Length: 104
Image (tube, rainbow, N blue to C red; front, side):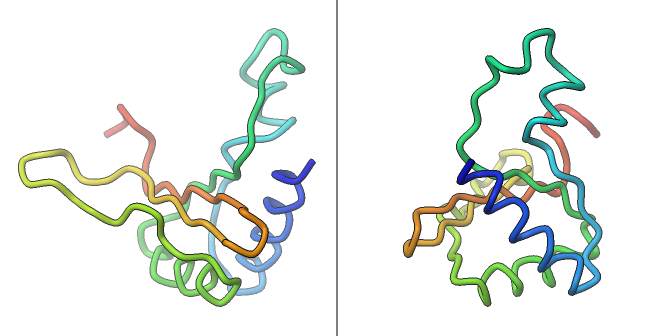
């Protein structure tokens, strides 16, 4: 339930800021993809954000008290697919995706 609460909180702030997004986890997503969605566990929130909206999304997350957990790119590797943001006050985790792994 905590992940759903965080997802709703971030989604509301993204909408207020005019950020286009898609939620990549949660009960609706599990129903759509899995035969037994009740067995699909998740503990964080995942958002797919348009590349043009990434800077605004990151600004909103920072305003909400989140900080990036992993912000390193390695030479010779594919560009990052997602960045993890953590809010230490409640240990909330949000992954912001700019694309999906394996999708060009």
